[in-house]
Length: 462
Image (cartoon, rainbow, N blue to C red; front, side):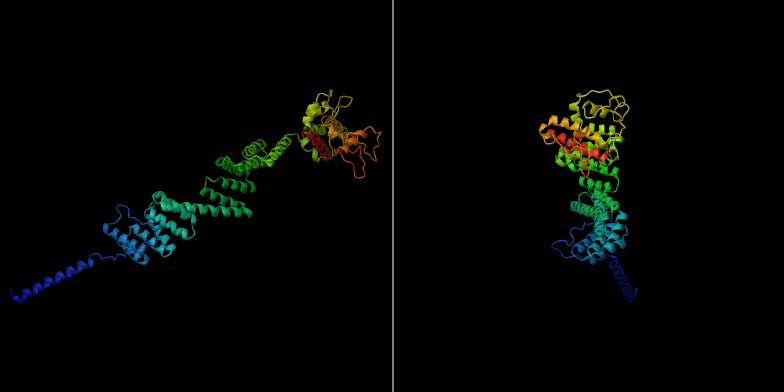
């Protein structure tokens, strides 16, 4: 072989070798600059998106970690370049997508951050770093409830995220405060249906808070939803059986529903927990109302009636003066032939036996006969005699009354009864002082007279 040919061949081989070296250098991975050491991470609350086992090569995981270090060094742009290059090389490497989300968070581009986290969560719905990051992005975008759901999902995927746990608790508390403030504001402005929705949201956030159920019940009661109000008030009392307010509220609702026995039961429970004169009076008033509602219609309409029958007057005296009449029972005995079929039969017998009213000589009571002022004065004076027998000191001021009436002289048969009734304050004259013996008694007059007798009879106990 000639010398020139040999030299040329050597040179060709060398050229090919150089070309191969150049190609190898071009194909070899480029060295990625590592960020300088930092005293502390710039974003300590960001959760490092650890690549799950089997995701990515050693080289990809190294580059992923370097990108995160750039982010924590305060250079999100450089971190984004490395995360983006990783994703371009391997599109299913969702930890890098998560890294891009955190880099966008660092730049306060919250919409882009949410988009990156969304894609990562689509790839792995239980990837805690992406769920937590999406929660941060949504919170920054003002979507508190969705943010809280993502934080809770992240905790469900990784219960070891203690810092996230405290964040969730704070968010729940702040959310509860906001929901409660909004609910109260809506209730105060009369937007009751919206207020109910706000209270329900608050209860979802804090289902063990009895006051929320009680306040919701109050709104529902105002909105006319008594069944729901009752259920929520009862829930409040179950959660805190030592709070008398819930039992009072239950009593008020039951009272509105006219279920007086259950209302009395609730009020009594409240009174046992927190005694008060107001509540005692409330219970007493309710007992009277329950007794009144249980009475026949003829009794319930007395106060508004233009006239009063003898049966109605007997019932009124028998109910309001029951204790005193029972003490006086047996002083008078009579045969009454027309009382058995009357609705007022029990009270007719009571007042006749006590001597407050009497049957006619023909042994009839005539329950449907109209009561005139002379009749009322007669019954009142007899009741006053029973009161005087039990409390002579009280009776001293009106026992020897000598009232003057323009239409009634002292010799009249009904004068003593009329004089005594007016002097004791049980009955009144008209404006010019007349008594008007024959005028029919109205229901309001009868009720006022019997109440006055009841008050005098009660003074025996004081």
